[in-house]
Structures are given as structure tokens and as C-alpha cells.
Length: 371
Ligand SMILES: Nc1ncnc2c1ncn2[C@@H]1O[C@H](COP(=O)(O)OP(=O)(O)OP(=O)(O)O)[C@@H](O)[C@H]1O
Ligand SMILES: *[C@@H]1O[C@H](CO)[C@@H](O)[C@H](O)[C@H]1NC(C)=O
Ligand SMILES: *[C@@H]1O[C@H](CO)[C@@H](O)[C@H](O)[C@H]1NC(C)=O
Ligand SMILES: [Mg+2]
Image (tube, rainbow, N blue to C red):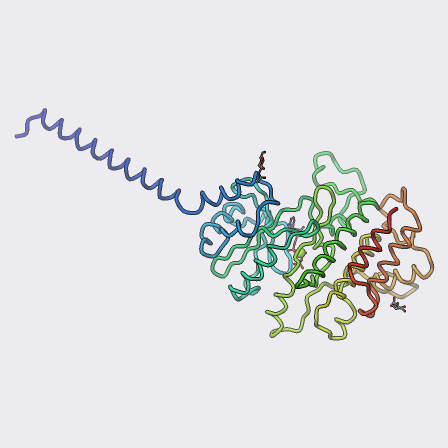
């Protein structure tokens, strides 16, 4: 028989021991889970006062494959496991998500489709290069993330979205107050000039790098607008990679209907800076007229043509003002400036690539535009 007092002492001692052991286990578990990555990750970003401009590609090394589990889990949380309501775009490389990182910074995550970018080493090298390119008119790549077959590109989020929507998806009517965030007033002439100048600057910068980058897909959906309506070119440096991977399967060139230079139709596949100049000229026409380059326009009775044929005809008749986007306010519009604008657009869209100016010259011409 055990003495009841001894039994009480023994059982309380045992439960004390049990609680202590449990506590110790829980404590060490907490320490363990906190240790790797996730803390350093948020600190690396938090250091910078949520200022996107100070995140360099070196610091985004936490997107490195060796840490991919951590960065991917952060992305999974930030995109709520790539929830479909976070999708803001669906382009040729894959889906784009709007995501909020744990430090509060909002980013755009481009989830590349599986067949894009096969080789890991090439992918990393390419992204390091692109991540180091900085210019006020280019969308910044903040990092990338590799996990198995998944490849993600992380970009700064550009507030007002793409130019495409600002040209073709505007409301002229007074929209109800509750939808104020969705309202896009038609852009004014000054703003359109500012955007075109920004795109010209960004392109000129890409074309004059030590290793020039040809964009290959200049179009209004690849021009993003920030809160000041400053233009930021998106997706530079991606088309080339896509092309190399698909060249053995198809002969399709990178580019979008309506923006492609005539030499592409003749089977010229090599990407040149002059091809970008052509697409830029088309973009100029689109921005001023508000017409989609891929849509045919009636250029005379019973005859349809492209935006460029239509524009050339009207320029020849010196009726440039008639081409201006009907939804735009014509206030303060100077005819001489409009004529010069269309002259530059026609220079850029010359059928012969040799006769097109370089982007540097286009920048100069545009800078002389507004006095
Ligand atoms: N950094 C970003 N900030 C804000 N919105 C973005 C950003 N990147 C992309 N988007 C949005 O996602 C849309 C889709 O982009 P995406 O590049 O995937 O498609 P696209 O430009 O139409 O086609 P392509 O793949 O040929 O470039 C853009 O038009 C834009 O509205
Ligand atoms: C963060 O903000 C402080 C004060 O607000 C400033 O002194 C410091 O330079 C900022 N750091 C960075 C990296 O921007
Ligand atoms: C292209 O440029 C050449 C040389 O400046 C010019 O003669 C020709 O008319 C231009 N063609 C078009 C279609 O603009
Ligand atoms: Mg794009």
C-alpha cells in the first residue's frame, strides 16, 4: 500500500514534469520555425521603408532557388495561393497577379507558363541582367522566384495599369459615384504627349545599352501608367527568350498584330531596333487617334485598311486634326503640333526599316514638339 500523501506528492510532481517538458517542446518548436528565411526576408524588405526603388536585385537574392521554398511560400500567401480574383492580366507568357507582400509592398507577379524559359542557368542569368536595368520609363523587376518547374517574375506594381485600357476602355459619361475607382476619363493631349515621350525615352535607353535590348512587343498593353501618368514599359527582354525556345517548334515571331513591321511579313525574323521603332510609330498613331491598330478602318468607299494606311492618306490631305480621338477634349490643341506629331509617327512607320529614325532621333524630335 502507498501512503496517500506520498501518492499526492508523486502525482503532482509528475504533472509538473509533464507541463515543463511540454512547455520546453513548444518553446523550441517556436524557435525552430522562426529561424530560417522568413524573418530575414521580411527584414530585407522592411529595411527600405517600403520604398520599392531601393530594392535591388542583390537583395532579392532571397528569391534565389536555394531559398525558393521560402520565397514561394511568401508568394503563395501574398497571392492567396494564386487566387483567380487576384489575376490582373493574362498575356502570352502567363498570368499576372496583384499581390501584397508581408511587408506591405504591392507587387505584380508574373507566373510564367511552363514551357517558357527552360534552362535554369540561362533563366537566372537573363533575369539578373533584366533586374539590374533601371530607368524611369521602364517597369522595375524586383526579383524572380524558381520552384521546380514554376518561374515567377516579381515587378513593381504600376498604379494606373496599362495604357491600352486608358485608350480603349474609358467612360465619357458621368459614372455613378460608387464606382469612382473604375472611372477612366479620356486622356488629354498633354498627357498623351507625356506618355509618348516617356515610351520613347525608355525605348531609346534599351536600344543604346552596351548590349542593346530590342523589345519586340511594343504595344499599348505593354505600357503601364503610374499615378502621375508617367509611362513605364513592361515586358522588355522577355520576347527574345520566348522566341529562342519556340524557334525550333514554330516560325511565329514575337509581336502583336497591327504593330508588326512589314519586314516580318516578308519572313525577316531577326529582331532589330528598327522593328521597335515601327511598333512605336503605330503606338503613336493609336495614342492620338484612340483607334486599335489591329482593327481595320474604312479608308474609302468599299475599301478597308490598317491604321497606318488610313493615317497616311489623311496626312497627305493635311486633315490631321480629323484623326484625333473623338473622345478627347480639343481644348488648347495646336494644329502645327498635331501635324508634327503625325509626321514623326509616319517617319517611324516607314515601310523600309533603313528609312526609319533611331529612337534617339525620335526623342529629339518629340522634345521639340511642345514649346
Ligand atoms: N507591373 C504591373 N503593374 C500593374 N499592372 C500590371 C503590371 N504588369 C502587368 N500588369 C497588368 O497585367 C496586364 C497583362 O499583362 P501581360 O504582360 O501578361 O499581358 P499583355 O501585355 O496583354 O500581353 P503580353 O504577354 O504580350 O505582354 C497588363 O496589361 C496590365 O494591366
Ligand atoms: C528610411 O526612412 C528614414 C527616415 O524616415 C530615412 O532617414 C532613411 O534614409 C530611409 N531609408 C531608406 C533605405 O530609404
Ligand atoms: C520612306 O522614307 C523615304 C525616304 O525618306 C521616303 O521617300 C518614302 O516616301 C517613305 N515612305 C513612306 C511610306 O513613308
Ligand atoms: Mg505585357
